[in-house]
Amino acid sequence: MAERDNRRGRGRDRDETPEFADRLVAINRVSKTVKGGKRFGFAALVVVGDQKGRVGFGKGKAKEVPEAIRKATEQAKRQMIRVQLREGRTLHHDIEGRHGAGKVVMRSAPEGTGIIAGGPMRAVFEMLGVKDVVSKSLGSQNPYNMIRATINGLTKEQSPRSVAQRRGKKVADILPKRDEAPAAAEAEA
Figure (cartoon, rainbow, N blue to C red):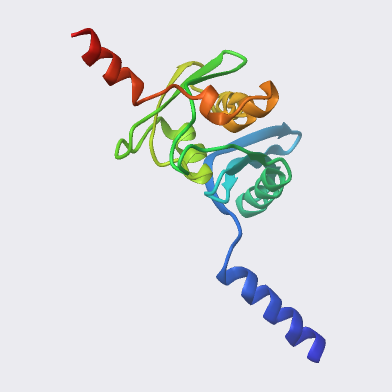
């Protein structure tokens, strides 16, 4: 009896502070025609993230909607990626991602811009924890392809720290000098 109470307590703690947030992007009813008629099933597409730089997506199929969502969520948690964010709110540089006929363009944005993105891409950015981004999807409007193209682009992103480390330089050497540009313009005038 005490063991069951202990298990119940652990489950309650997990529900109060969920590690990951999830967003249902698409649900699709599919049917299979059999001798007696049609058998219906459901396919779910879910994006999961911790809103601090980790995101993943998954798809699940089942006879019932909740089961399809659960399967998709489990798959999304298994295949998460980490993305470095600038100031914890935007991307470090402009990125282009592709998957099949889907192409997405993502650009870093100044503070206060918000998330300017279409449906499936917006879900990825919200679960990732990006607060300012401008993006455009080109080509395929299929939510599966859009999410895959977005994830493809995010995996290509590189932080200045990783670039500096790879080149054996300091981060200051990699980033453009902001103070010198106005001073040079004044000297010329």
